[in-house]
Length: 289
Image 1 (tube, helix red, strand yellow):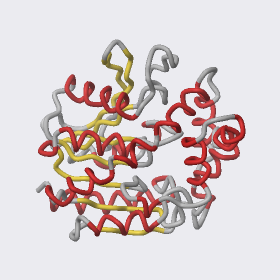
Image 2 (spheres, rainbow, N blue to C red; image 1 turned 180 degrees about the horizontal axis):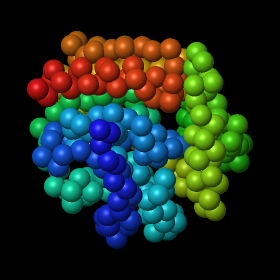
Image 3 (tube, rainbow, N blue to C red; image 1 turned 135 degrees about the horizontal axis):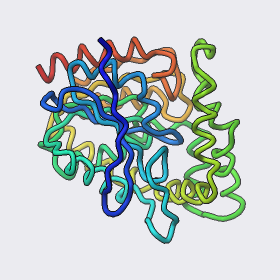
Image 4 (cartoon, rainbow, N blue to C red; image 1 turned 90 degrees about the horizontal axis):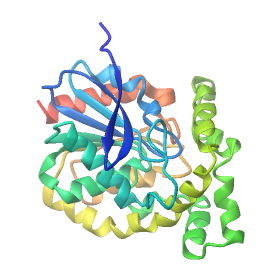
């Protein structure tokens, strides 16, 4: 029987946080942290595929998906702030120790959670969730860092281009060996949320905050060396945002990290759900028992 997935909303720091949850409340916890420009929608098929064995929780970050989208004056839209809300949700749900799956923006949020309390993290699955400068692919990141170092109309134009339907579709199909496996529903769903009035300024604010994630890398790498946390990297090798060198780089500080490069792109779950699910079930079955 396919496990039922619940769609719930909690109030954290006065904000509505939408999350998907499935599985036995007493089972080991797996937290799924989505990336830009999507939401927990990206995990809609993965959650039931894992919930027979784990309590799976997938929140929408503030400003994304079905969670609250306060204006810039009401919420700071930094990765620290997004992490604070995620931590508050987990506390409210009674989550102690947990494994996490991180992708894109979910990675810097997950890294912050791990640095706040290393003992809570039982295992990490990273699917194109970057933690090393080797993972940044030109020219995408040249445009981002040009904007973050010198925000203005000229550098902002490229970032606004990243908020268009063409760019959202590109994130889903670029690097995928068989693009027909990727449903157009994905980029149409994401774009409808990106196009909400005021969301462009929210996304630009998060772009400007991105260098704080790179600043954390030395502490993150020390955490890896100190904790030897079990880590599985299942990585779309054709991703031109976070390239395969970003996956291989985890071996620098976690020699026992398991790394699998697959013939897909940034949102590899859309084309390789079965492959990724198999790797996760095998990995967590060994490291969590």
